Image 1 (spheres, helix red, strand yellow):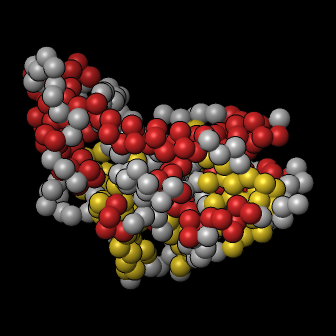
Image 2 (cartoon, helix red, strand yellow):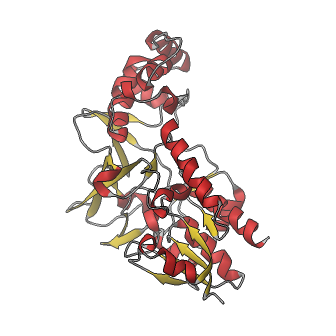
Length: 365
């Protein structure tokens, strides 16, 4: 007899959702977390009454009624609307690209004026060979130079001329005055932070922190009927075929003795001179009125710098390498995979929950 029905590697949203549903069905679960806290990248930590998103801004949004109802079991959400600002050499623009953005850039007032301006700006390129050519063909020089080029090069760590055109197959343009970044039906931030959600999901589940499963695979596989693995798949197989590529993040957190530092929750820096991609003033996610504030600065870096994978690089080479690892995983009938690292796909939070519940349905019917 095995001690656990499931050993779940990772206490992020995918692993915690599965653990909750498995425990509800009477299954014994052990959750292993490499970090010294639960929650993975949606972990929030309270300081000065402000819930800080330590691993970058996480704004819940979805148009799936079932997912919205599901997550609302564990938290009450506020009505925060994501309306970021782009800062280009001190000039401010609303995001996403909408009539406010175009007015700030060109002083255009009507949609027809914007369409004419874009028509004049676009560069005719029959077959764009890289991201820069693709962007120029879609929006022209002004939008590309001020709002796309610098930010994208910082995010990917490569010139836009060396990035594939496929990264931006299209650029959403809104011909209305609308700064709401997401088009989804539901949007908000959990009051009290995301950590409370994870605590509720794992309330009836055994959790061990500061444990690197990949250093003790055999031991944990001996005590579990199945392993649910949510980490990077190449690490599970000790990179036997070579490493998968990721982009990573470094976060610099600062406390300021003021009640309002930048006036907005999310500010993107779209020029190349400023090294960080964006700054987050966390109190504004929950409409805080504290007399101090906390701001984090995000730097996009190579995975090797931090050894913490964040964003999969889904180019042809890496996708082919992932398929080799996935083929190995399929040979192990006691191994389940889930989440953006194990599946080498970027998932928003609502899709993460949906995929976890899909696995629950597959496992338990």
